[in-house]
Amino acid sequence: MISVTFVNRDGDSMKVKAKVGDTFLDAAINNDVDLEGFGACEGTLSCSTCHIIFKKEDFDKLPDKPSDEEMDMLDLAYGLCDTSRLGCQITLTESMDGIVVTVPAQVADARNR
Amino acid sequence: MWSRTTKNIKNVVSYFRTVNFSSQVVCHQKVCIVGSGPAGFYTAQHLLKNCPTLEIDMFEKLPVPFGLVRYGVAPDHPDVKNVINTFTAIAKSGRLQFVGNVTVGKDVTLNDLRNAYDVVVLAYGAAQDRWLGISGENLCNVVSARKFVGWYNGLPEESHLKFDLDAETAVIIGQGNVALDIARILLTPIDMLKKTDIAQHALEALSQSKIKNVKIVGRRGPLQVAFTIKELREMIKLPGNSYRIHLENPEFIDACLPKTSRPRKRLTELMLQSSSIKRSEEDSSKQWELIFHRTPIKIVGDSNANKVNGLVVGINHLTGDDWENPQVEDTGLRETIPCGMILKSIGYKSLPLSDELPFDHAKGIIRQTEGRVEGMQGVFCSGWVASGPVGVIASTMQSGHDVGKRIIEDLKNGIVGTGTRKPGRDAILSQLEARNVEPVTFVEWEALDNEERERGKYQKKPREKIVDVREMIDIAKKGQS
Image 1: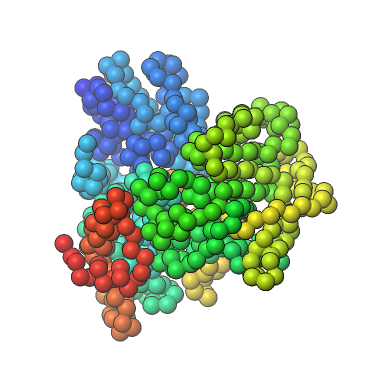
Image 2: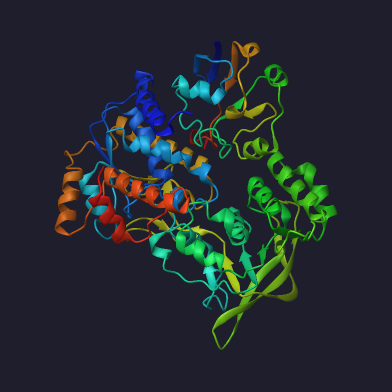
């Protein structure tokens, strides 16, 4: 088991224990992480709700580049940036122990209008 | 492979438990939601999560829940429908009562709801069409995309429709994802379609279809297409089809790319690459085309049969420096695209479900600010009826959650729900009984759901949708598990 931390758009941190070999989405679901609407399509590359943002140094160490299919869905994600990935497509490894990822809002936050 | 529904119920129940208690509000007020699509369910999700004592009634016009997830998402996109598992968990959480087969605006009025509930959330989407407003629009075989989608998805209201699929060429006006969905359904080999939950009447009609060429026509250019890259890729990979993307000025498009955002850049690059690939003709008995810079001027027909046989278009060009919102200028040139069917995919529209509802008829949306309906204390709206009919499930999810937040704010601040105790569901149910309306519960929907899946097994489809409302109600009420 490794430790993974999800930080939501309000800045709240949720640290959980997750299994190596699970995806970030599995880690969130299995630990009942409080992320409203995360993983709507249940990991089938049919939405962008498991969008997570990595720190640059963690992003650069990710083993696989996103497929065209992942990029296509990521393109719909709000707050898309250079270190964005879909949580359902990334498998946890030992070296990710202690990793911290940010979960952005789905669309432009109503509070900012 | 975990059972999704059980996992989701567990998740939703424990999900409500893990919320930070200091953020929760104690609410005894009565809430109802009109509409059981994503907007309704995601608003409910947010409310239930943050108000542990709140109970919600969800009214739905049809006997079945889920709105466009059931009736809009294409049959060959089953994974997009996985959100139904989340909605089912919410419906079975014990604090939401699904009340189907009740038309608000007919069986009960908005006023009845306001009298019975502290909070009314309008989340009934967009069930009307935008019109082109050109001559010939009423000719036979000129069809709204929305109706066509409803038809192949088994929406009861559209299931009796008959289309003439004998024509060789169909024109789709509009270049959004609905346009591509329809093109794909018209051109996908029948052997692939028959494994989906497409309505049986549509499968039979499409298996006799003679349509070989689908022209997807847009007013503006490649940089302004509204469809997204996943859907374009599906078209490019569609078995048995060749394609032509008519780029009149690829150099100009290419030069614009550095100024565009990543999603637009990738989409446009795909179009540029694909327009120059020579697709082999051997396996392609059918073809689709993307045609730009064509404004529909009028629809012409065969005066004997009153049926369409062509679309007259004006050729335009785009000017201005803002490539996202260019000016569309008519060159004065005209051409006629011969075709035997026209599908208008230019957007949906909502209608007000009561005369008192403040409504922007031009945009086809309720007048609201941050989800609060103008001038109507306690009435909120979320999803397409509030924002306009654009956006995928994820954006509607955000809308639902945001409106949920506003409702909780208003409850907390005593802006709503401070008057005399409201009667809630009982008042509405007695009205419905007096008017001989048979509400359908979620458990009854599940019986119907089981029947559809059973029937689907015979056809090797995930389900066989029942398309007659009377039959739906009879099965729902008879076969409870």
